[in-house]
Image (cartoon, rainbow, N blue to C red; front, top):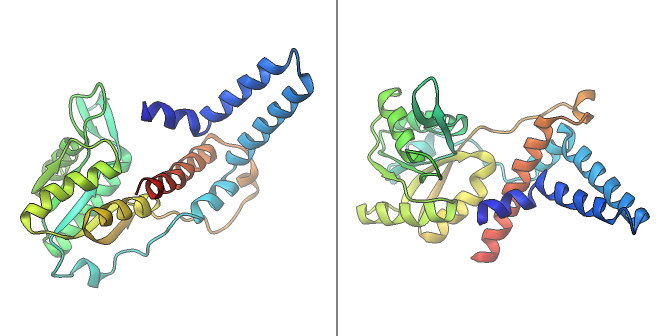
Length: 247
């Protein structure tokens, strides 16, 4: 139900619903229907421009890259890498494997492990209709391709709050409370907050920093890429608001 609601309330789903409502009003309330459809068209245009998408992304918490002193902190007990989806039934590999987002995160996790030698925990459950969990695919790529060992896997979670609770159950039993947390920079505010609420001391180790320093004329043209960036930013903004309400 939650994934369904997420798709319904984030663009383009929300605008499809509003647009259909406007079409249904056309016969009996044509003026109101036109206003609704114009509203939908304007919203889709604005959200589809990279100029507006950049404003949304700039509004998200952007942690500084982890410093050498933070990475080498002797009190850190583990590197926790959060999953970012699967590349399901990858034809070239003949199995489920990591998505592009997860690959970015585990690559940085491997880099951190080589820098400080701390053990790695990978976290991510199994989506519907897949053979492997995110954590299993992440471990396979880390160990087989990056030649970096994985000490623990958490493969039952389906959202960030569940990841925090389940990872706490694993690492607190090992006496580990201070962690390097690896996720995308746009996801870090929500993730760090969730992990701190269960008891961790979090050192943010963000990757995939957003950068769009100069606007071009084409940034004001609607594109599918612009809409995807806006959708991602709205997802994180709404997620932070929801987690704040729930906590």
